[in-house]
Image 1: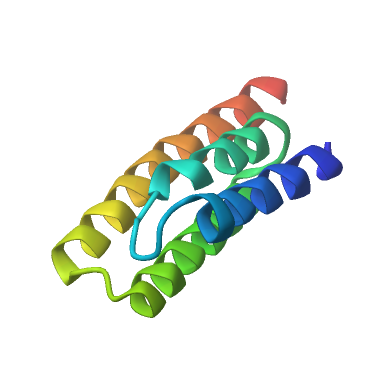
Image 2: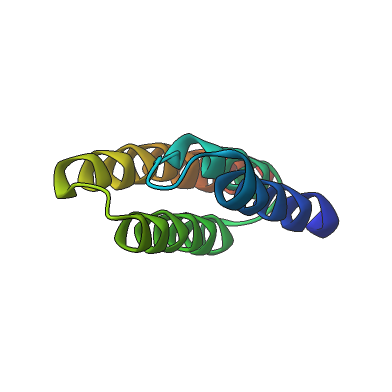
Length: 97
């Protein structure tokens, strides 16, 4: 499973850097690794994946000159999905006990 998470983060970065035009913000690419982490590991790992995805989106937005409104909307959407993923992983770990 760690390979799948790393591969999905790498694929998201590769698509964001190579395939998409400069300045194009795609926060949705980083949702897949977050959901993978939430389905297998605890809430701390899920939160770390959300932070890593938000950092990647922020870095691409700043480097690409994306307007602040679009950048904030992308990070907010990723944070909302991340919050739900953290809740999912907490519920899953509580059900396993």
